[in-house]
Amino acid sequence: MAFWLFLIVAGYLFVALSIGQYQGLITGDVLMLLGISGVTGLAAVQITGDKAAGRASRGFVQDILSTEDGPQMQRLQAVAWTIILGGIFVWIAVRDYRFPIFDVNLLLLMGIAQSLYLGFKFQEGNK
Image 1 (tube, rainbow, N blue to C red):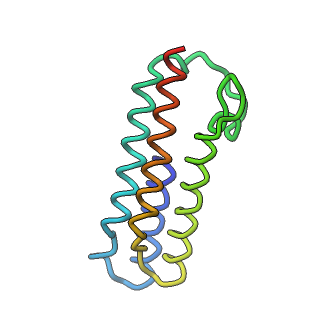
Image 2 (cartoon, rainbow, N blue to C red):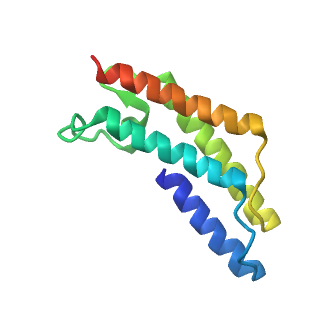
């Protein structure tokens, strides 16, 4: 969630200050991505609860890609698609001075990846 919040705020400031336009910059697709990541973050906190509070960090990348059982494919998939769509976002914002309109299938793919992450996280929490 912090990833998309940072990109959207930074992108908005960049585009608005570059072209002097402040209205109509944020697209529905960008709001959809922020919503997907927000719901995923909220649900992940609800699933995990207090279980993660005492766990020592093994480093940022290890923490987001792995559980106690090692690296998890669903986590890698969620991170990979977040980075890919984030890269597209930055590329279009910097090159065209506007926010992108994503293909519906990319948004669905992002939602599916985040849903799979939550499903497996729920399963991990019930062990």
